Length: 408
Ligand code: NAD
Image 1 (cartoon, rainbow, N blue to C red):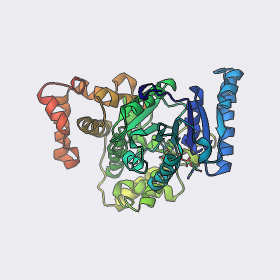
Image 2: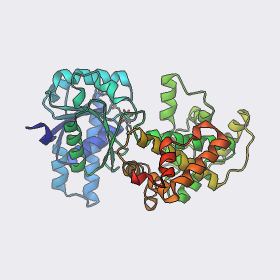
Image 3: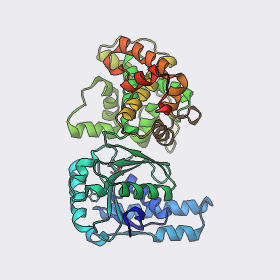
Image 4: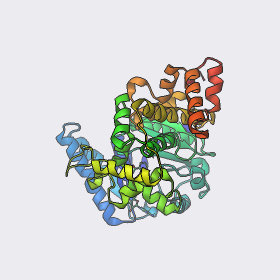
């Protein structure tokens, strides 16, 4: 088989947690047979049951017939160890977000798999080159960043490491197509395209809580713009505790003023939807986010303790700060070559982050405003709030030429 026509027939997934389950279904649904490894046999057993139940549910809903459900399930099998997956064309690793653990797994797999096999990680933010460096086949290593729930969300970020070969990328793109995904190639940087842009956006939302806003007010403004969910409702769905635990584990970031509300919520066991309380309250068995005045009181307390003079923050300011934070980071991602085009960034935000479809994505929205206008607005924020608002070089350049991101 030539390098360019490399097609994935058999795959393995390492990890049978939240992401592993969805990824296994994506592969099986696309006709790829999957061997599944988890070092916790109970987890694997539970995961196989969940997949079978999901297919049974799909049959009851009339989405697939029984024969199709059986065929999909027949493609999935448990594997006892790495030796038994040595013949696969692709491994997707979805274990805990820990670089040393991932490197160890990649090193071991590299010694066992055939030379042309691809090794992919579902990491949300770790350095793909550092993972690839644990192997002797860095050109065959890449990120396949699925979004949760992986069998439902359309977006797939394909992360190209410094040495990932064009053939490996092509094989991943072709697999993405077979799985019915919207695939976007991203360069390797912390958080790739989507999560890197999410960071300054969420930071603004958190800062506004300290300055005078309340969670529901921030969410309502962004949902009014058309977002599927505001940032605090999103944190409740994802789990507020994930970042809290990651900060704890890394031993840094826990003291930043912006995360103090999150910290307090987690200390109270308010992790989000899964625990019935987070930024909002959830009745047992319900996903309906209900306003909780206890949370407003907590926000007020934390901001006063931190010495903030609270002020009224209107929906215009919420939109301005959150949207411009996205656009400015998007522009940096574009100028650094992390994304191939503004359209790719828009695809990520439309398909993975609930950006309103009628606005075309954050970069298309900025083009509609006019980049000269965006540039001025960023400069105004820089004057009022400081350096973090310094406009990306690309915005100034395009604005001076009367161009938009799409013309690049
Ligand atoms: P999870 O905790 O639900 O599952 C991890 C699984 O890995 C567990 O079943 C565990 O038993 C297994 N495991 C741990 N060490 C192992 C080893 N040495 N060998 C085999 N199996 C091992 O985690 P998750 O939420 O599915 O996340 C997995 C990866 O996907 C992480 O890198 C995460 O950052 C990334 N990710 C998560 C999300 C999300 O929303 N949860 C979204 C995108 C990417």
